[in-house]
Length: 523
Image 1 (cartoon, helix red, strand yellow):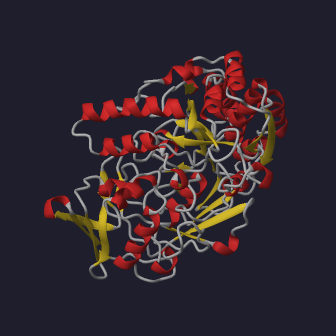
Image 2: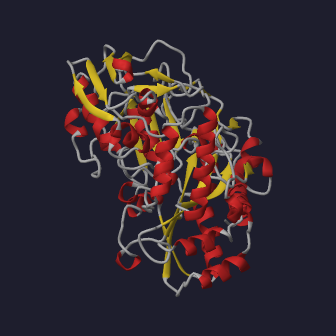
Image 3: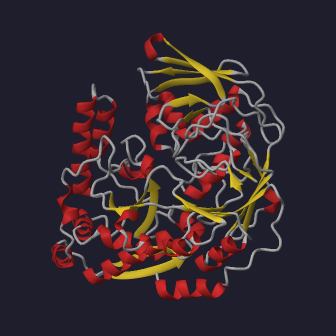
């Protein structure tokens, strides 16, 4: 990032003048963290699609601020047959945005589609003998063995089951849905969607929230806004100016360089809304050369210095970031650095020697960087520079984030439009347990993009689920970290704190695992 020119552009934008037109009084105008190109939170794990899904789709269960699963669309559940039978009962007054009533058949189809793609869902489904609707309001799991985390699996914040009409949920999970019809607090206004520019949601008048206070993502999802409008503004200077002048109300992921300027505006609030840090990941394509060679992956890892990545995103102040040289979220029960010595070498010279010894032969390395997503673009460019210093033949392809989300699904070699390296981020609550850790899954064709294959990681993940106590679970966590550092499904590059900015007339803002818009209003 070019900090000086960026700040100069902001200073020239002229922040002092208030906006003359404030828009609809009960419309929240948002600058999202990225462009919305996919409407399907099952098909993609992109955070921007998840945020869209949190408005449109309601969920069977949700997780409160303490990580405890709570009923959301259901009144509750009954567990019988020594934990091998779970029966869920839907609450009343659930309607899809097309006016149809939500039934148990819709939930069954939605769960099946979600379980085919979600990391935790795949584990849950492996324990399931049968899932069937009993009547319009009840559905039942019959399990092969007790699975006490079933309600948690369906409600985890990184990938809860998005309930959609059965006809849509019957879509192949590897094919994107094109209709965003749920039963959540807001309906998607399809005829106002212009990818790359604008997306709109309107309050769903038939939504009946739970009569409970919000806690995490659980409780009463009360829609207090009439409309939520996302405007994609890829230039940070322009986005900051729009916030300062009142043309926009909420900026999800402001550039860290611009935070001091915005803090000086009394009409703006700059706060950390997300409950956990944002963790960066360097992801290899394990299907093709050169990164199908574990020794080449290790050569890169020994040259990585997490501090370079974190300073590129969040600046020099270490209060805004932290190194985390393990695969599990720092300061959580499973956090450890067993076998992480490779990330403590931080030597380009040793990496270059290891690369030569591994037999690197000048293969082209295609790194895709999202030019319109400043944080991920910054860490991508750090890697591009690192690989070049190692002596690799690097080609950086700059695209928009939406294109990257589509492109990363390609399993082709680089000669046919594929990729070698991508970067992404995840919140800390997505990396704290083996069953939800996307980047740690190593089941080949069914793994997250990059498709690593390692039977030992998979064996340890399964063993963690069967751990008899916390000490045993932690011991397996250490083995998982050590194995991950041997085979390197990805390289962790530390975490940073990502504040949001909103105008003072935005009310009801609360801390949550992800960005949600229920509960917010405008004063």
